[in-house]
Image (cartoon, rainbow, N blue to C red; front, side):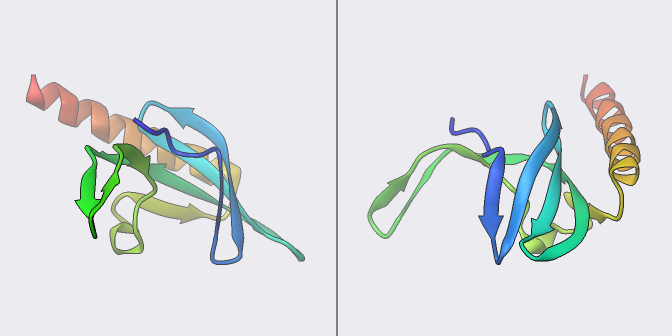
Length: 101
């Protein structure tokens, strides 16, 4: 399985992974020429591969889509806020995991 990149460029922004714990990660969002940085806390999803237009797409991890923002992706103003959000998501995941056992 292809692992999610530590550096991603999309729509003029650069995203740099600062922290990863299992399927949770914090990425710093920056834009060249802008001093403002934000932090994105994400739940990393994956797929088992698929075929599209006759081309095989290999299994890989993926960043949440914009339609999942607020559910599996969150933009925070500071790194401390991102750490707090990650802690909340970890607790929710632990509760969910314990119910599945």
